[in-house]
Length: 239
Image (cartoon, helix red, strand yellow):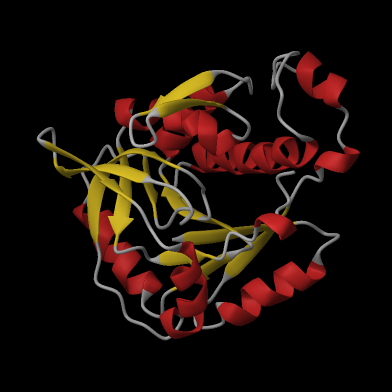
């Protein structure tokens, strides 16, 4: 299955780190990220891609539009694909295990997340429609464990996804791509309630918008994860 990774032209060190860290995986295609600092906000609004009162910061706009661009390519191609951000770290047997899990999904699957941000929650159905589960993580141990993880074979399973944060790595079907394009555009700032956090947050990036819709589409998460992220906020391009 095709594998895209997103990284800005002005951050070649991030591209180099991604390719070096994931050198056990072949045939990544680089998708140059749209740089929010150079985008014309008014032009984006006039094209119907974002509402005028959307509060997304420049980096989040650029990152979101890059994902949108790939969704459109997948929808047009008629073939599913993987999408990774440049802070994703894949386990040693990612290709074999991701293929196995996708083959186990219903034929009408939309999206499966291979990992998420580990400074917040992951809400999913442990038993479909019966046991709603909320997982929390220790981001410090995740970061420390990445070198070991890159040499690890992971045995994972798919669970129905409800809410989480981050889209460091995921697989998307053409049907799912079309659905997310319909649901997540135009970008807008709206309040989303998170049962796992016990409060509402205002959307500030495309993955927040996706949280509105996971429960209504055929969305899944892989546990244990098949990719990790160090989620370094200080170096984040979504600001």
